[in-house]
Structure formats: C-alpha cells, structure tokens
Image (cartoon, rainbow, N blue to C red; front, side):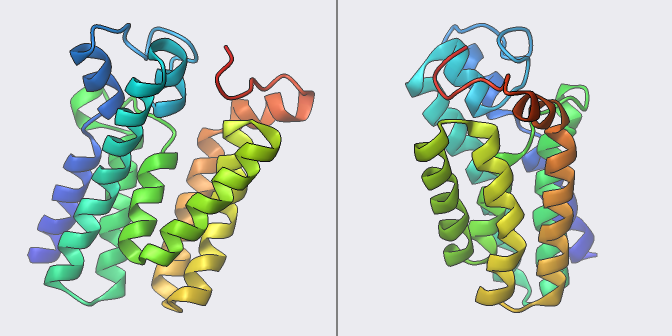
Length: 195
C-alpha cells in the first residue's frame, strides 16, 4: 500500500506546473499560449526572461527530486524508487491539474536523476551544459544528455531496474520532442534565448 501511495504522490507532485504558476505569479503570459506553447523553462525564457525561467527550472527539477528522495527514505527497493521517479516525470508530461497537457519533461527528468544518485544528475546536467554551450540549442542538449542518462545510471548505480526505467523516460522524452527533432534535421530549430 505504501508503494502505491508513494507513486501516486509522485505523480501529483509532478503534475504541479512550475511554468504556469511562475508566469501567473509574475504577471507574465500563459506559456501554453505564447512562444512554443510548451509549459517549460525554455519557453518561459522566451516569454518571461531569465529570472522566470530559472525559477521554473528549479521548480520542475525539485518536483522530480523530492518524491525520489522521499522514496529512498522509506524503501531501498530500486524498482519502487524507479517507479516513483517515472511517476513524477509522467505527472509533468500529463498533469492532472492542467488538463493532462504538460511540458516535455527535461528538468523533471533531471530532478529524478539527481534523486536516483547525485552523480547521475550531475553528469546529465553537465552534458546538457556542454552541448548547450557548443551548439546553443536547448532541445539538442536535452536529447543528447538524456540519451546518455541510462548509461550514467548503469555505471554509477548498476541497478538494472533504474537503467530500464531511465531508458523508458528517455524514449518518452524523445517522443515528446518529435517536432524539435524534425526542426533539428531541417535546420530550423531555434537557439537558446532567441524566438
């Protein structure tokens, strides 16, 4: 019963949209109706600037991190830890509080990875930063970083359950980035800080 409760709580926490809340509190346009229409930190950067984007990034990362840390405090079962993480991630993508229309999941997945092991989160985040510095394309950075995440989990933790669940999150994230992948292939993907 505790396992189910943890997974449900993780989903509900994941369903809290930092982008929508931050934009509302700061008097900014709804990110679902401006820019790319995606309620995530990259689009908040477009519609509201760096401060709003940073707060959104922090909030979306935190809601992936907290449920996993709570789970670790209550169980050592890697399968339950993994399911709690993916539940928070799914909550961000399909939030019950916002008509099941959420963001693409990069920051929340990063938070989950930090929850699994701080080194896995740091390696993924550093990968994102390096690719972003070189190419200045957020989606490309996210795709490369999350594609490497299951490998980081494998080498750092070795838990097969967490490797598989991380790989599933990566596949879902790639699916959510279909339009970005098409834009990347055609050379039309926007750069960080530009509309």
